[in-house]
Length: 396
Image (cartoon, rainbow, N blue to C red; front, side, top):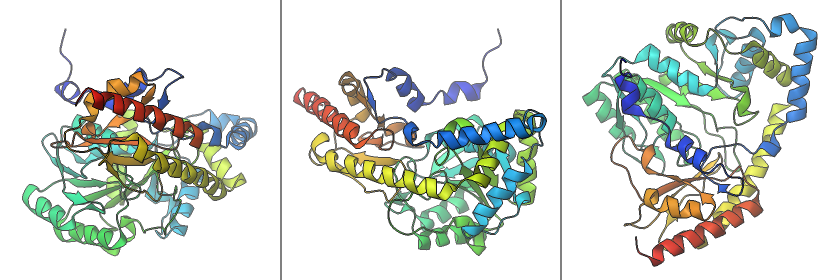
């Protein structure tokens, strides 16, 4: 039989998904997945929205739709984007089947095999997959606790001539860090001077617990004609809806629409209409505020227990929002090697190594703090501490 495509053989599957499969037992307290808390879904109002569109306009809800997306949903998304400081017309938006599809469409529209893509270090894992499947050469841009270093970004853009730079500047996955406004402006200026696309992924930005909102990179004048902004309902409404979107300049947006026609024709009509109806009938911002308050308490519970759970000398940051916390154990620890022992204690995290485009820091790990309640988080950290101490007693 003919062999599989080389790009599939070389990229492989998601380590996060592999860990979730191994830790699916109900007794496991799983800090590995980026799963929103299901008890906080606005299930009743979402069900009412589906009921309304299926009873009020069933022929439309169950029919094919345009590739670009349902007009009512695009109008609602444009209004939400505009009120947050980025003037947007409905025609600026392409609705996608989750924002992950937006990454795949951009990879199809922009990347030829062998093209260079620049990413943060560490980087969102599924973005590395999308760019790898497109045949890209993926290079990490050095940075610090505030995100990518603009001077290093400019040097790499000049030297490597990349097609795009990909960033999650707000509550980044996996680190939880947020790029300050002055650094965003500097990144926008690099793009303007050097002619590179910026792909700004913002699935977590509305989940802020403290601090002030930072403007999108796309809102800076230097970057407006060269930035693609990605958004999603997965973290603020429900991931099962599989609703995302991209906002892009017209030429690139049209190219992504052509790629989407080849991928799935359009995002499910009924889901789009139900989301539009939900936005018309409910206050999503109030719902997000309730979710963010709960997530903030869960972050605090995670922060309160980490010192006892991790080896002495470990370090971590305090994210102002989002879903993830990034930690680094002392030199000599390998979180991939430690994971089997941790899982035997019915708790799990994601080792940091898969998130690196280049040489990984094997002492790092990511935990998600939103899926479990504060009491469950405390118990999970107790188990994690037992596993770490047991492993340390046998040597690393």
